[in-house]
Image (tube, rainbow, N blue to C red):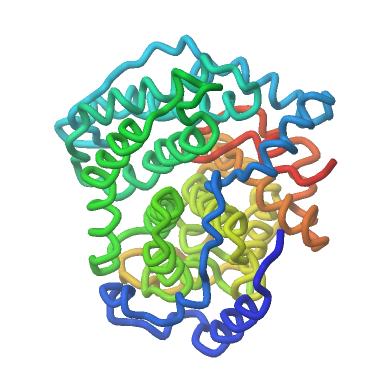
Length: 411
């Protein structure tokens, strides 16, 4: 990948000057549209370009065709996921989706439908079996004609976690399964617009409202919103949207930013004192944001002296059973500032503190490892130790998952 290293250097130099443990911008996030620093980051607008480019697709297919391990074994496991099947039976569509409140009963089934969009799009990408593309399109069109609102207290989180699945499916089909002589049943311009309209009417206002509000949440919320918002910016070729979320990620005064989520000295995360499950949910979103930007020619992985790497290593080290430093810090909301020690809740190597053993082991580690170690030649010893025994061969609806297959630059 050809990156604009002059732009990267300028952005990183600016970050060193403006960022320590807290951002320069401390008046909420309402002014992120006017910040000029985002101009340092311009997406290439390559398509498909949300997590996977055409070059990636060809590489993944080659790994599968050659039955190259561990990628091939991961593919076989993904193929067996019932939500990745082309005969998946849709639960919805629903007019309203929510994580809590009056419409909470729709949560799990709607999430499964969105999982099926993503997984069938990935299966289409790899196998070229049109049945998978048709299934993803069927579900997207059903929701495009029905979904009206996201409800409840967790609207931003749901829009962040679920939006990218639809965006990924629409981006992939728009650029690899467009109606043509080769694909007479392919997605049409009218269908693309119909699905995009639903995203703009239902998901985009929630993302925008989050950015326009004063900081109020743990950091994983803002990170997942940014992940979906950046993906949508690429889908819609919207450079200003892209720069807006880069501005937020790098410079906003919110827990869901790189500078406020990970401590630059130790790698401690904003949610490390909360529990390990949510901490890993947060760093997984961090790597997804960086991976999307990387595919668009921008290096966010290296921001603030490879701070994402530090967050991964700190978190994995603790969850493998090693001691790590911990300090109580004041988060930007003032609500999550009373944790005096790192939390053992949902810890990977459980010390008898919690019965929910190992919920921190989510499929988020190989993507970051692939970038820092395989691409850049840096060291992640604790993540490497984890990956000796932990295989990302199951799908987690909060993350792209299947790292050794889908995010593996090795031949």
